[in-house]
Image (cartoon, rainbow, N blue to C red):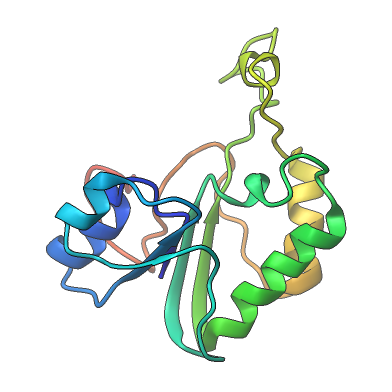
Length: 156
């Protein structure tokens, strides 16, 4: 499952390069998703309990309750991810650290444009609340974990 699939780029990689059975959802449908023949659902992840082996989110979580940035809503979204993940499944969440001065020098352009991102401490805190056995691998690396897929252009 690719949650917040955007234009479907990641999902098409999972489907066409690795032969994965992929479902995707987003709050709006990009024209490119239809052309990629992906199993798309508009909106949230309303699926049965324990449906997916892998769930993938790329720069999505900080958009949950974007106006208020409510901790309660962030945790609620993570609980929903946990609900639809099979026992032993993997949830991969990639969130950019827009407060890292090595990658985003001041002033923070994303803040000036009205976007809000998580600080590393908050991100780790909410993830561990819902997924206490989480492994944190990289911060600001934007890599696919080798355990999930070996993609030469993404994996170190």
